[in-house]
Every structure is written in C-alpha cells, then in structure tokens.
Image (cartoon, rainbow, N blue to C red; front, side, top):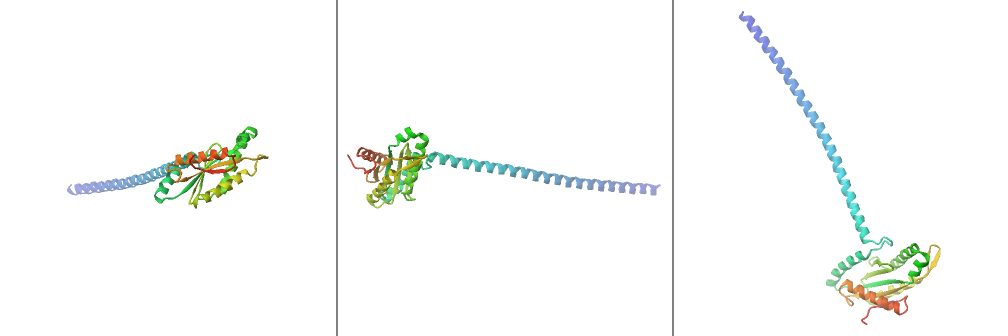
Length: 238
C-alpha cells in the first residue's frame, strides 16, 4: 500500500514538473512574441516618426524658401529686377552707419527720364515697361559691381557710388550715362529716343541723412531739367 502511494506521489510530481515545464516554455515563447511585437511596433512607430519628421522638415524648408522669396519680392522691383525704394532706404541706412565713423565719401545720383510719357501714350504701357528694363540694363552696364542701382519709382532711378575719387569721377560716370540713354532704343520694332536728367549729391557734404541727400539730388535733377534736360547737375545751395 505504501509502495503504491509512493508511486502515485512520484507520478504526480512528475506530471506537475511536466506541467510546470510546459507552462514555463509557453511563458518564454509568449515573452519572445511580446518582445517581437514590441520591436516591430517600435520600428513602425520609428518609421512613422521619421516620415513625420521628414514631412515637418520639408514643410519648414518650403516655408523658409517662401520667406526668402517673399523678402526678395518685398525688396526687388518686379519689372526691372533692381532693388526697390524700400531696399534702397535700407541700404543707405547701413551705408551711413558705416561711412560716418570712417569719414567715407560717396555719391548719390538721381535719374529721371526725359520724354518717357509719350512712349507710354503712343506705344502703350508694355512698350514703356520694356523701355524701363532696357534703361536699367544700360545704366547698370556703366556702374561698378560695388555700386548700387535702384528703381525709385515710375521712370526714376537712384545710383549710389562708393569709393569715389572726388566729384570728378562721379561726374564722368554721369556724363557717360547721359550719352548712353540718348542713344536710340529698339522697342517692339520701333525706334525710341529719350534722354535723362541727373542730379548728384555727395555725402557728407550735402547731407548726413539719406532722405536729405535724396532730396538734394532730386533738386539738382530738376535744375538739370530746367536747364534743357539730357544733362547732369551737382547740387549746390540756391
């Protein structure tokens, strides 16, 4: 009887051990499966996050590009591609800050086209726009790379020339520009002849603020017009 009980006990223990072993094996496999599922989920999340990060990066890049383009449009004349009035004012404010402590002289030339209105009236605004583009190209060709030419508005332009050797150098450039603008233009198969009147002011002789410097160059330009046009005048007190 006792022997039978011993065998039954041993059999129960053996079955219990086998059951435990099966349970342990199942637990291990379940743990492995959970780890694998977690790893796969992590990869999926990582990939999704990477895509989202890439999307965000692409959007930020596009936003930066849009900002740069917007800034360029805000500071560039759409017709001629030159800096516009706002960009000119910004440039002059920086130039004044640099020139004052270094006692650097620079010149400002104010251009107004002569006989431009008849071109618009007779040939149309498209012809007038093309003429303005060609005028901008001719003036730019006579300036140095370090000089700045801006479209001030309408048929008016402003050039700023630095590192000049006295007023004579600037006047030589102005004379060349007057002659260049007097040469005929070809606009849509039509020959167009115009001119330009130029007023010149110098920093710091004629002003230590850019609005005053522009005003005095503008005053000198009108003196050139009253004197017969197609010429330049250096500002002097009336």
